[in-house]
Amino acid sequence: MESVVQCVVDTMRERYSEPLTLDDLADAALMSKFHLLRVFSRVVGVTPGRFLSAVRLHEAKRLLNSTDLTVAEVSERVGYGSPGSFARRFTEAVGLSPTQYRRLDAGVLPAAARHGFADGGATGCGSLSGRVLADSEVEGVVYVGVFDSPILQGRPRAWTAVPRPGTFTLTGVPSGSWYVHALARRPDAPRNPGETDGAIMTDAVGPVVTEGMGREVELTLRPPCWSCPPVLSALPFFEQSLLAAG
Image (cartoon, rainbow, N blue to C red; front, side, top):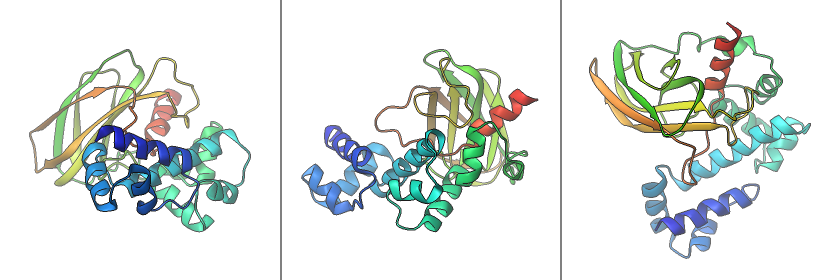
């Protein structure tokens, strides 16, 4: 079924600006939409709708990085009918508004984004430890964060940055079921803090149920493969920029 799912992913990446429905994707896969939903979710880890949304927002990030299109024009290019809905969804997923993200891309670190991230968003009393491996060289710090989604999006509930692959400990982790994401830059990564295309290595595990102390996880950083949902959150790069500035 992987080849069928890859065909659907390719369709999303090629036609993200169109009003694609689950029926459209099922037609491309030559299967019922109910079967596609089950198979896609099993192979990729998220539903087709969530993956398509991530593809659209990732393309919006690229357009904000590389063009002078207005936010409304970017919204239309990536398939959103309402600029307001696009701006809200972008802000939730990326952690910055479209305008703030464009300023981040220009090297301006928006003060508003510091609030709620400087402390890692830590709100709990639990902890989680583990080890990050890498199948090739990385550059700079390794970011590890706890999120409520298998897609690396929004603000972390707890995070840490370690100077190199190795052991880590996350404190302030709330009790619950979380996804642990690790991310680092590749040695040839652009220095632009907002850029992610082809510039990262990442891994995720979860859901991990945390209740107090003692959970351990292991992650291995690799370049994203075709089935990996795009990285949406700009906050790891924002944090790395703060570390570099400090």
